[in-house]
Image 1 (cartoon, rainbow, N blue to C red):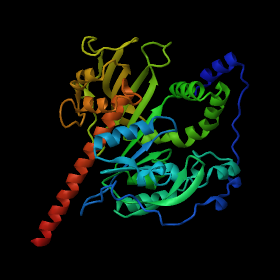
Image 2: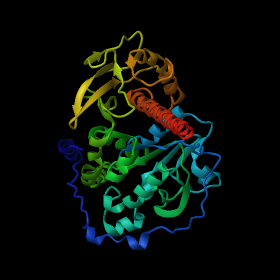
Image 3: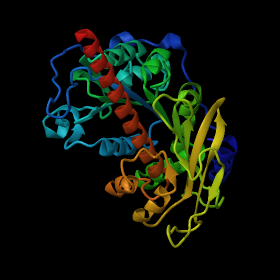
Image 4: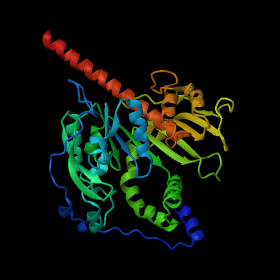
Length: 409
């Protein structure tokens, strides 16, 4: 969070300056906290679709800090990819399974990279390092297992238990056509990054992140403002050093900012979908005219919105030295069904039919962000990933057919 913002709050609340102290790497002692290696946990074969002959795994990376909407985004992804069954691997702890972070559907497996924490919660207390620090994560194992999944192999993945902070018995993960890895570091390690077919970064601004945490932790959980700010400040050095730089490598970045329509408004959001040009099998979405810079205030008769109103924009920009196409929405809308008006102005949305984007938003109308740009941009990202999968699957099928024809000739 910006220093000016913190200073204003500190002065108002008379909070003393907080200092985050990180112990040296010499204090790091992982040996006592490695998980057991029992390989007996079985996956639920009814929940995940095995790879067909010649089918390749598409690996997607989603990076974001905790509390930045990854869970909601995963719901949108699995909703768009379809499937009759979506749920925790093995059914989850409450349904006779185990405590798992893995989500499976007929087509997709979602893996949480927290499972590659090297130490449990007590181990991190001894090392003095946060989970954001690369030294607290097993990138060698992460790389080897992601490489194995992409090769169509089954893996035995560790589990980080968020309930009690322990490292639990490993679980068996079978390859599915789409594997999504989400967490703090999907693009940090170059070896893992090179395995990704598409990467996305959820970028929540400091101001919005503070507002969200105040609403969640102060209003809903009874935490004090002092404890919330201390938590943010303690994580910020490692976040800036190890997490935020990944946005430069992302193929798409969803940026969530305070509204620019009213500087006093702390709840309305301005959301930008930053799409990198030149990515294989990906064509960025845009409004009205490709390559043009557009600012659009929709007709209130066709898209009603509360104060301070709603505004959209689209156009080319440069982002960390790369050419990008940006689509932006600032403000909320009252009726999701009216979003079809915006959908009519979008090109390269990767929908299969007109109205599918609005339909997908309606399917998760109760999810956070479904009345603003966060839901819209996450849905655009989900359609882009689906289209990328379909293109790569078709290319793999064509290559397999060509090889068979060549072998018979």
